[in-house]
Image 1 (tube, rainbow, N blue to C red):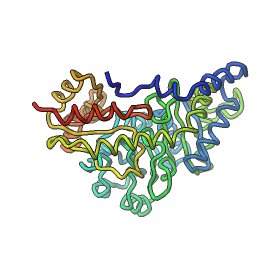
Image 2: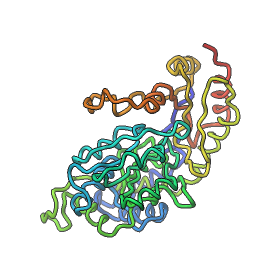
Image 3: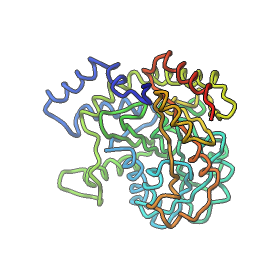
Image 4: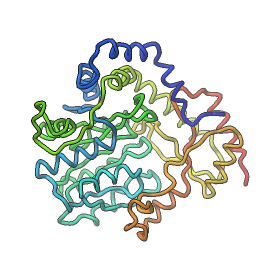
Length: 366
């Protein structure tokens, strides 16, 4: 079986440094809020290109904390609206509703799968306070039209950078494009921990301080609580793992981009729709194809020992969690969710495996 993502193989590629990093933490006797996290935060902010990085428990918490901090600072309040793509993983929207803010869904561009910049302005009201930009599948979602809208309406631009670490927009890395960004280090991400982990990146001094405080029970001084905060902290072992893997991230991303380019140049099945991406703005996180009878194609690939995944089978507005939206119609989003299939891609995938995937796909008949 050609694995969709060989996590063990990826981590093995960092041995023995990975095990040495973990042992370093174990031997230190210090497991939270220590030197590994502090050093990783500096290294990651240097990599992304922001003034601050605050390590937190996971990518969802990173986004939740950004909104919590903005509310605490008086920038936003309950009932304010946040523009968000309809085509996204539900975590993006959970972060908004968790803070009693109102998500306003916008259809994607069918070619990029990211939010359609030219459908945003018509959704803006007096209650709109921000745009949540999701760099879906590892592809930059920023656009000059979005920058114009953010400036004209004095909005906050918050990036969901969970999938796009290492991608660019105009020579700047995603995660540094807006006022703040949530980053995820879930094991399956390009920069993956050995468990959950996340970070907020920002240049905003005030926001960074409030996020850091709120993530630590709302406390800066032990047993003194300034805000009703959370317990959401990146631990020392995960930080040590991430420090080790950050050093190889650009190389790993390039390996993924090369696989994606091979797929684009060699998959020639007339009914399979390939992604349109600029390799420079894409980190190779997921390689998404579309096919009208997706489930048949996935079964065919499984039967031929190729593991695939679906990102994502049910859009947020059709989830039971948001049953009040179930009657809404977002036809482009719904079409994408019915047709997308993610092919194997990783930094340790062998050339012969990529060729096998292509040959099997090109031979597909229904």
